[in-house]
Image (cartoon, rainbow, N blue to C red; front, side, top):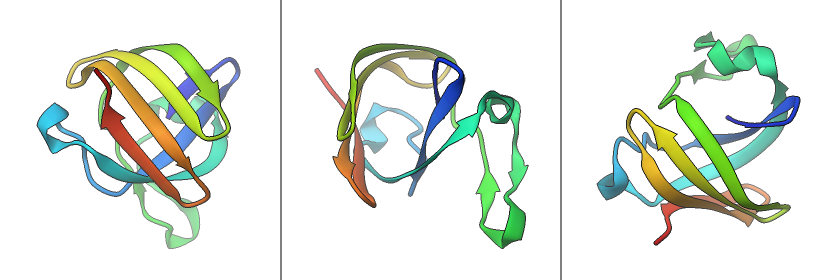
Amino acid sequence: MLQRGDVLATWQLLSEPVDPTSLPVSARKIADHRLEYLTYEGPVSRNRGTVTRVDSGTVQYECFDADEAVIRLTGERLQGRFTLSGSGDDWLFAETP
C-alpha cells in the first residue's frame, strides 16, 4: 500500500521483497484502500487472506499512471528507486537503477 493523497494505492505481492536481491516480485493490482488500512495487519474479510506489512517509511513518486509507478522508497528494509509496472492482474515490482 502506497499513500496517494487520501487513498492507498494497493498491490498484492506474491512473495515478500525482503531486500533488493529478492526482486523482482510478481504482483496484482487491487482496489485502492482507505488510509486506516495503512496501519492494519491481520485477516481479510471473507477468508481472502492476511494483510502483512512488508516495510514502512516514506515514498516519493517520480511517475504514477495506469500502468506504471516509479517510486523512491526510504524504508526500514527497502531503500532506493523501484518500479511497479503492468496491467490487469499481471504486475511486477522491481528495483530500478
